[in-house]
View 1 (spheres, rainbow, N blue to C red):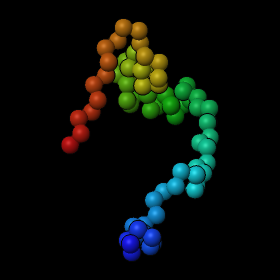
View 2 (cartoon, rainbow, N blue to C red):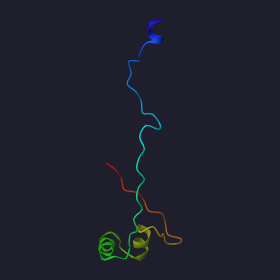
View 3 (cartoon, rainbow, N blue to C red):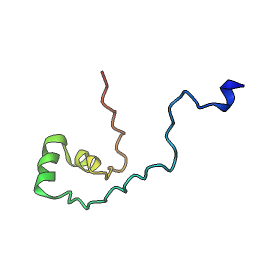
View 4 (tube, helix red, strand yellow):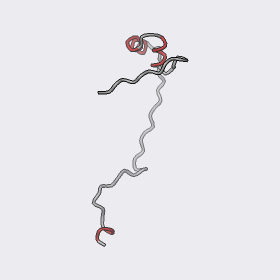
Length: 70
């Protein structure tokens, strides 16, 4: 019974409570700031697209298609 009682050859796995991750800070972001408006100018083609990028979908708008990965 040498294999059952001895030390395991495998490395130790991650234990569930070994390390605590710090909580992410929630930062209030102004979506109407000059930097955000400049970004919206370059990424959105119209008002509904701008609102959708900012997290406010237009009612009845078709769903966006995701970018195709290579």
